[in-house]
Image (cartoon, rainbow, N blue to C red; front, side):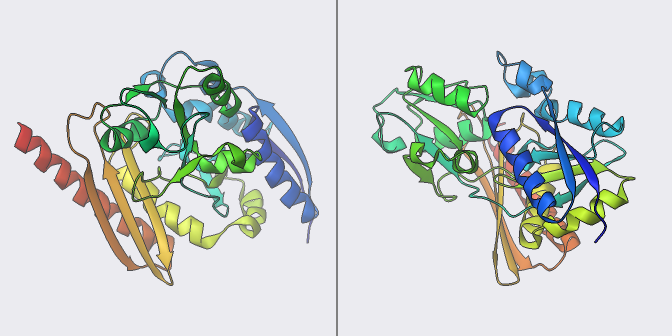
Length: 308
């Protein structure tokens, strides 16, 4: 096999660097030479406002895409749930790696589960999806914004600003912080975000040489699952400004996908949709996700008509 020299663009948070180092190690095992290019993104800099109000999760990838475009880097490693559903012209998602735990985690110094919280307790999250789902589970709680990288969020919890916070289980596990997890939310309780727990690798569309090397890291079941999930989000106009969850699982060749839309203010009931089909390629997975999105749209419209 031909050996290549690659530069990986990455955010400089501890979790992002772990993810980039993980990909670096795998490529080096294949005989390639790899360096990291650490960068600070706008999403890392703006911490006083919710992402939905300042441009969405694309703020975490724009600077990395500039590095790819200008030739300073050959690939960028992202948490897939941070990657916009539509990539800019000239970029492609070349690889999705095997998924870590996609579930949300309950983290608290004092309370073992969400249900143990006293009435009116304060829970931290800036995810509109988590807000909507938390309000459905415990409408009495006070939901407060929580921005910053993983270590920053945990410090805010430890400083007593919240009674508990909700984080992605995958990030805690990757950083060896699994002991901080008091409980995990099963998908039936809190449906994960599209792509949660998966790593995506972005390249310039004209870098077929890089994309070909990355095929060795692609995990087909995860690729198909997130193709369906991202299709739901794409049809719904999904971004972090939409309280949307989508999660797909496999049973043999049959994929089952569930989606939920919610009102972060808790003024409307959650809307659910689901479907199953035999899926063996990304096109079929995408069509399944699109069908669930259309069902979800119809249900959202029905709810709006009822209230209108």
